Length: 173
Image 1 (cartoon, one colour):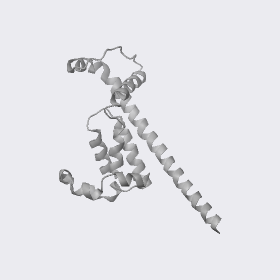
Image 2: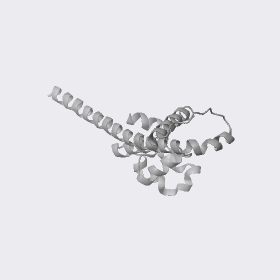
Image 3: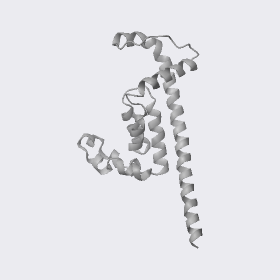
Image 4: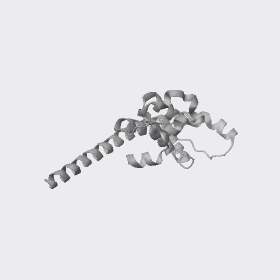
């Protein structure tokens, strides 16, 4: 997995020198932002999963800022945000709305969607609080669950690797 990511992600040197990213100055020069250690990668996965369910625009920017600020793996954090994409946003938003309604102990409203700004503004007060509460709760759960699962998978992979190495060494003796 580590080699796959290193092969398919952009070169850190290229990104650092990219004209549109020069305003960041030395922020992108921290090697932890590009390193695939267990800590940096797992934290990047968790941060990206959290921001994937946050119902605000600029999720990738928020994930990048968090990764830079807390020294997580930047490309992994930004890539994980794509859990929510144009195809998955409607079902995620609906599930988060239903979850938020349940958390607020408020029955979900019956409604027929109309793709207009007037409808959205009219219904925002009714659907906003359950959607926000459900989205933030889902974001926290997704971030924590991603952290735990990714950490356990990474640990399992390392243990399996050591056991395999031990078998090879013991069989050659």
